[in-house]
Amino acid sequence: MKIIEFQTIGADPEFGIKKDGISLPSYMFIDNEKGNPKKIAKGFGVVKDNLLIEGNIPPAKTKSDFKANMHMLISLISTILSKSNASLYFEDIITYAKEFIDTVDGQSFGCSSYVDAWDLRIKQSPSLHGNKRPIGGHIHIGYKILDKNYNNKDINPALARAFDYFLSLPADTVKYCKERRENYGALGSFRDTKYGFEYRSLGGFFMNLQYLDWVYEQSMKAIEYVSDPENLKKIMSITEPLYDHYDTLGISLIDQVPPVDKSIIEKNIKQIAR
Image (cartoon, rainbow, N blue to C red):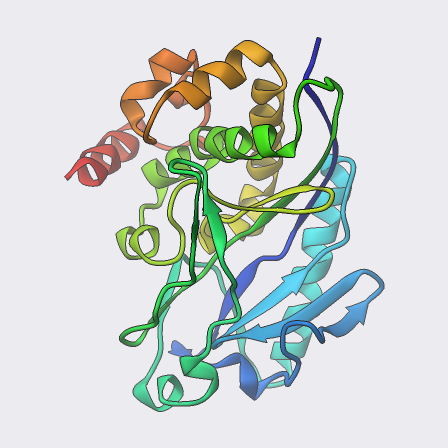
């Protein structure tokens, strides 16, 4: 019997903003802060988060709806930026000029505490230093518990760990950003929600339209993996997220990464291991 059943997938991705190669702060384009989003369409909102711009989409039940929602969000925000000839920047980290960093927005961080799935401790938002800001692609999953022997306190850490193995660790083999991983994008980062959980480890680079199929499909794989009680037990038995554990978990790493030259994957894994 399955432990859980998928219901919805949503996202509240962050983006950088660029114009003529220069990183611009979100406060140049919108005034809305977290808790008071600018409604840009039914179910779609946008806020400034530090110097980034953050959007949200309605929850979706299918891949086509998830992709359509993300396309709509990116299009709506791009329309706002295009009036100033600016555009969205899909990366894991962005560098700003000191004049933008030394502002109220540049020194504030809208993200609250999160849970580390690997040590099960609550972690606080990191202090901001320097002129770089991490960009996150946060995934929201709604699910139904089918087995009364489990609750979300059992499921969510296991899901976050599974998302590491199906999304973030494979993503790092293609696009690895050490600064983001060590700042605000640590593996296993999640939050409990009333509908399921929010996964916070994936970087903004993978919010690019070309990766949306992959993000959805890998999310479904992670949910399906944890829905098996034996798999849940296995993933909760390991103590840290290492590539060496793929065999232990019965997961093929090469089957999880987006289609790229294998030499790129091998090179990045060696870099990550340093």
